[in-house]
Length: 208
Image (tube, rainbow, N blue to C red):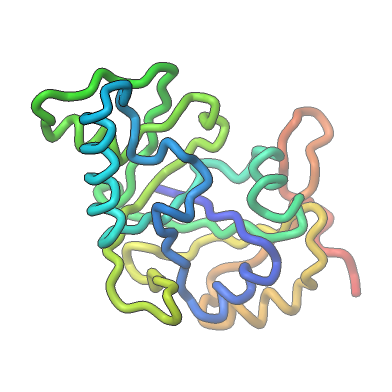
């Protein structure tokens, strides 16, 4: 499946040159309900859920993507107000999975099943649904100064590079970063004229 990662200009170029993506640790994510999709009214159940989350977070991180690059809100939130770039990857269907969005928390499972474990990993409140999130969970193995990475490989193949509508990175700078990927040609985005969406700017990059 095709997935999209939004980055600001600095980390976008850094990611291309290093050919790897940062793995997010669970405690660094922006949703306090991560891995806690259950009703935690009961104190003992609340403790058990939080301890389970803590144990899992010690060894697992996540790569978060979107199923689309056309939503202007995602560009605004995750790509420095359209000043950054978006990277499109092809990933195997058995490696990545779409998040399920729900309006109510699930009853606490007694006892938990495999389906309940999946709910922990792939469920978010439906107000996040605009993100159309797709996730890849990854082991936290070797790190550099406490930061973990996933290298580009057959399970994370770079296919597209889209410069935001307000991105000031010149085309030649992106082309230089893309030398290891000769089949990938950067494109420039703009706000659409007919719909509330981001589209490819057929006029290309500004002439420098």
